[in-house]
Amino acid sequence: MAAHVFMGGTFDPIHNGHLRTALEIQQWLGVDYVNLMPSKRPVHREAPGCRAQDRLAMVELAVHNEPALRCDSREIDSDQASYSVYTLAGLRKELGANQPVCMVLGMDAFLGLDSWHCYEDIMSLCHIIVVARPGYALTPNKVLADLLKKHQATAREALLGKPHGHIVIHELTPLDISATDIRSLLQKGLSPRYLLPEAVLDYIEKMQLYKASD
Ligand code: ATP
Ligand code: MG
Image 1 (spheres, rainbow, N blue to C red):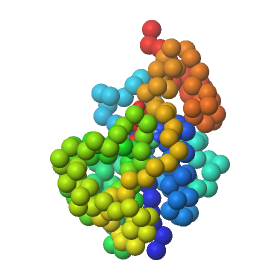
Image 2: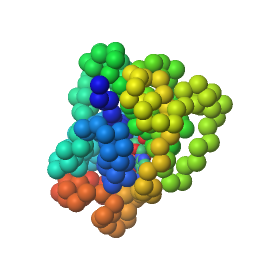
Image 3: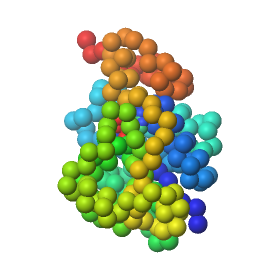
């Protein structure tokens, strides 16, 4: 049975680091597509002009002409707070107990996994694919080192042969791009062109997102 693969994120905004990662994972696993799933974010952290609906619109624009990538809006559409463990439980209910589910995390996100709500339950719901990210070495704390000891696998076959329970660390084309850097360029009035899709940049300009607050 083909794996269901997704990559969550704030996507504030989505950029080529996210898109290239998702495409390389899709090709590596040989699945039909990878889902990009924008998350809700606590209201107090929301930058002006970048509502969840804008982040969702940018993800939709970014995947528009790429059949290997899809947008999954379930967290933004939901009334519930978006904790990954609940999202995964919902996916599991939808897909059944036997289909492999893979959650893609950048190294920075993986290094914070033990602070997630009910993180201990995650390995019984999905596999985790950790992708290398420039600037973040694999320096796990004790909790994550133990998790790796218990769950780490090296081959892609491990992910496809079981519904959940493995962690695979995967190297791909390193792209040192972050949404923080893109927001910072825009706030300084500099162009982030070529770091993100043209359609996303057009949307940012049209909606006047991430402008310097003066
Ligand atoms: P911000 O700077 O606002 O935190 P970001 O660029 O880190 O934004 P997120 O939406 O926080 O983007 O990241 C979503 C997921 O994508 C995370 O798992 C993150 O580690 C991963 N990711 C983001 N950028 C890259 C990149 N350039 N290469 C590989 N993974 C990435
Ligand atoms: Mg981030």
